[in-house]
Image (cartoon, rainbow, N blue to C red; front, top):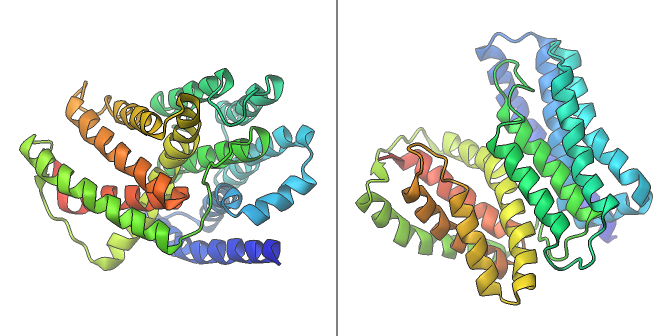
Length: 330
């Protein structure tokens, strides 16, 4: 019964998102005069990546995959996740690039190969293999390796983020199991409470501090509740989900256990999260590092007290959406 409910929740969630993004895709197709075939290719690629990214977040569904996917076939599955959506995109748009396909295959197979060729000795701790994967993922993001792969009707960088969520979540779920990863689409009262509380704590510090540091300026751009909700959904799926999966679910979980202290682990990851933003203009952007580090601490608290990644991801998306709507860089 539990597995059936997990499948039903997954299909229901995906159906709702498919309808929402079908409307968005229709508006994009109209804006860029995109014919039906390329529009269908882009939409099908997006939905396959979205399904692959969400599936591990429904544990009973993931357990079913684990039952039918023996360890030797799991790298092949990740390679399929990396290639099939892109091939559908290319078939629809005619925008096929060997370099793009090779990158996707190399990332998907490479991350899994690190763990299968060199299995971790302590699954609940941060190992050398985890360090290699962390450096690889950060390098991929910061160097823009996934840019220029999905280009029609314009640079679709959110495809790259969904691809990384899908590959890394499956990798940490099936290939190198990360205990207490927290990647579960479960929105309990505790999850929402921790998201709201930690958002309030962070806002009380960050709003006056960022204005005093001239990091932000008050600049309302309210376009209605519908636009606000769509912005929130897009940030949740394409920005917050990947960053929270990596920094909180993966790094904070493993480093806290390795250091023997949740405070030390959360503090270290909060600083690393802040440092991740140093490249923003003007470089080195130490004001951004400072505020992002504070945000990272409260994201970590929401994750730890909420019980899964949805608490920190809800909060993260709220912070970014509020900033985008009412503030601008100072």
